[in-house]
Image 1: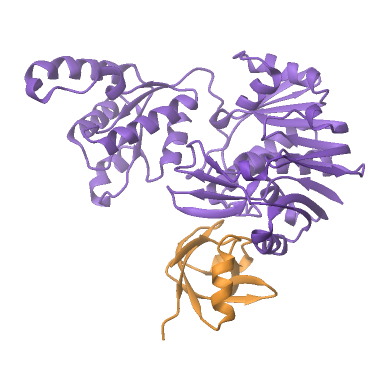
Image 2: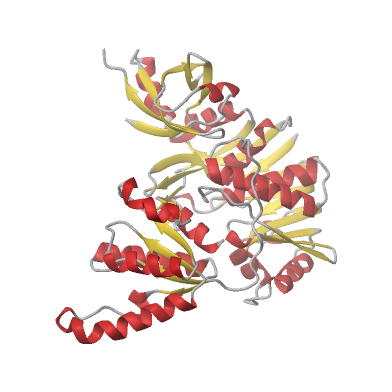
Length: 82
Length: 397
């Protein structure tokens, strides 16, 4: 379990609200958080290494929005348990 | 190409808990990454963390030249206003020398594990490591130096409380066109030629101060070097953008929908009454930390723990009158009360109520408290936060 402030926030941020559940994905060596309205923001460095290893092994993660404003978004990242 | 020199460091904080990979250099590059300029970033990192450094460059979109060092430096903070422990500093000695041979523009943050020697055109220099620009062996055709009050005193070799004198001395000794002295919650002073201007800070709901000075310097460099704004306009815009960062801790900076309001620069020392229980070691530790931070921010603090003392439980009936008289006198004289609400100590609740009845400003640090218990305090206009750092700023503003 990991709480992070997403960086490089995207315009679709405005569509999301607290408790929304988003997907954690990676592409071109960057890990990002996305949902039904599109890309929300990126996982910052320092947290990236341990998530990368798991994503590459096929593990899935979800990101729950625990606080959100017009200029910030904090998510709690947890493994997706089937 | 716009050059940025600066540290790539891990920053760990216990309260609130977080671990970041920034340092001044990466933060500066991240701040300017959405300004439409090509950035070349010079820094140091260990081989173990080069992939993390590359992740940051890809995330924010800047070019880099990394010098490999034995260990990446880390800063450990207990809380954002505490003095950090610096980890791996000694493992990177002797200090590396980076020579950059191009006469372009630079944003230059001093580093702990390396010294960069440059011959720049426009240069904004933020010492960080207490080394003067001259001592780096560098030159600049146009130089702006941005530093905090402590660094200003060190580099100007004076303890003068008159920051105007300190700034003017730095203009001369550093042969700089501009000097900006950052003064925490009191804003900044900008020196340019014979002109001096005060720059306010902007009020935010929350304050994340780690890296805020880096953000100020980065925005200033963009405004002054790239946008060709004058130093006063540059500093004012930097202060506003820094507030946006302090509010969100998000990079690149996102401006809020509601514009931030500047705070009037205080002309006199604020008298703060520090209320809170001090029956246990942890309570006394917290009171001591709050007091130290408030004093660092230039406030005069009345703390019953420090200025009146601890009551003898076996003598409570004879000592109580004397203690309550002294505490109420302290409350009467104060401008603002900072109260530790956690635990809802009866004495603290009394002090808050007394202060409200006297129309004093009250800031409440409230952790682990049921919202229903805050009704009267919200309703009477107390400023409430669960964050140590924010409580210090709100009290000092």
